[in-house]
Image (cartoon, rainbow, N blue to C red; front, side):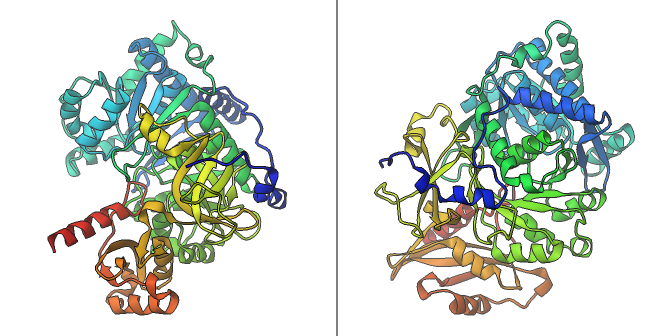
Length: 587
């Protein structure tokens, strides 16, 4: 592939939209040298505003909760930085893996790693031993902070990696004594989810005590005051949907820029110091890490953390007990809430807007969400490699359903054909992105980096269409496209049509081999429980016949109780494609 010359203002039609929707056209230079500077400054600022103001509140399904103020988060993360550098003797740039669910421990530990000048390696707590071993060996992690519920994996992991230091944290960490004791008792005695720990380790509270002692010799600021925007902040591993997961190298500058971009796009609906955001998506995922953890910290929001959003009823106490003004989520989360009686009866009264990302937002879900809550879901688009925000649907005016909005300030987007040429307006092409949020490359993987980076442009692998005003629409993943008799079929389009059926809860579309057409379309459909027994495969086929061209219609419909999903609730088409492959290999 070859890159074209730099875009001119004529090739950025979205810039004419900015003043109409209250978005500043230019992205200013980052105010801070590093995330540590941002974290310390905003914790200090909002602590001055109110010493008692809660920065983070963790809410478990029964409503029990604990909170940390901005001042506490600043002091505790300083102590953890002191533990890493002063007690353990880690060096600037050393990798620290953090394997925690949403909890009060997460911001303390993550901010501490960044303040230590170390590199944060976010790790899914549900990873298997093999996945942990791959990631820890690839990043050469020196230390691991892990939730104690999964300590039984540690003996095998430590035997196969170079991890030297283990810190254990619990979900109710920093809760008041009584609810903490009750939760720990239930975990240990009733649900039996606390395995014995058989490897050398230190509990988080003890690590913090040691860190505080070390700060007497070396203030935490000494570890981060010289950090620069180009320094590596985060190794964020991709989901591995195209093979072995790769570590995207995300710098302090990448994340600082993306926070600015995100806030500039949402500024019309954000009041610093007055927002309350629901964080149900995991903070170890780049979407919630940048948007919820960093972005809402920067405006002094109260962050409501839910350790696990599944089943979706786990969110009930958080939704009912706090004045939520913002939510972030994926299509399946919003759809799940819309099928909960308690949510329909008492939707959040203070909600201003929600942000959808991670996967395509079905138009039927977006429309029903507005009807139920009276507020919009603004669909955005991003990737791990872009920190993640690339584009966002403006909140002023009517959000364009089906669109992922316009590029964020400071971002260039072009749509490229298979031959590397820019495609005409309205024609599909691969989305290429350039901007200050684009990663430095893949960790120790020059070949994969070269595959996606072209003269400063990141080739996303997503197929999109841009209209004359610069609004983008995702057609589909390049690798998920189904080729039927030479015609391109984009699964998202078929999914969106089927999702409009009231009797459908969820749907996923993949390709399958076909002797006549090369490939054919298969739809996996989960019936809506409210319409139990009312949905048949014939109903789905008839609906598709009415709304889709013949080559786009499923030739096979499979009814399922559930669909495979990632930890953030993204439907995993790759798992369904593997099922299809196994099925036809056996045939």
